[in-house]
Image 1 (cartoon, rainbow, N blue to C red):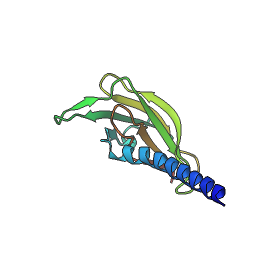
Image 2: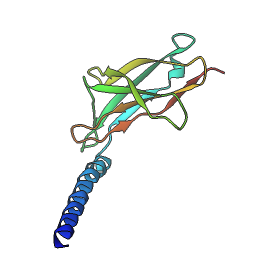
Image 3: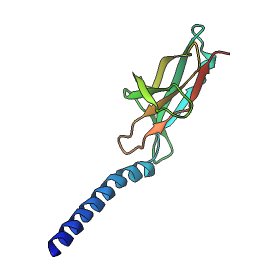
Length: 139
């Protein structure tokens, strides 16, 4: 009986220890400062009947109140093909220039709606930052 109790206590301790390790990084990411993503509405830059140009700039706020460009780094373009039941998926990785600016084409589907957004992964003391959601469709 003691042996079973010892094994159960050991397993519970290990399980609780793992759950604390898994939860801690997720909470730590939320506490980190976010980068600033400034985007121009894609409706202002229509290239074709179903093609739009998404332009933006990624900045890193500093402690003294200034912002430095997120230069020569990757920005993830994500797409979602439904309103609620599906996840965002990365369709393209775009590199920013020296000023932290990026530009990429986004498309409207023939049927339905597609949602687009830009995401910058957590790094260098900044948390994951997500841009504005843009919905493209035909009437």
